[in-house]
Length: 92
Image 1 (tube, rainbow, N blue to C red):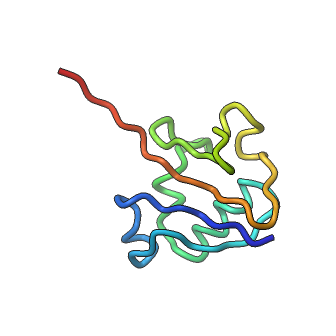
Image 2: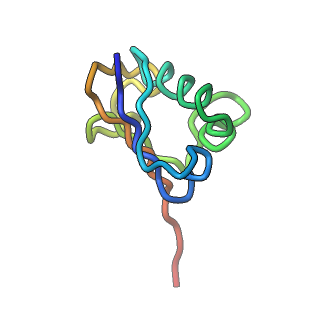
């Protein structure tokens, strides 16, 4: 299943500067593994040492936050869009 992954500006150097890439996968876990296989370095930016998504990266499948779905086991279908959104923190 072809899935489009939206790459945030800060991670685009890992994807050769592309703002989107297309990969195959039946679940979010598959999609992110395919993304790292095609463009090495994403795994280190997206996952912690235990293999969970980093807290500072928000991931959406078709505009739904995967934290409220099935996490890495969230199914994806042909034509879905996965968006990687770095968390923004700060204060005064």
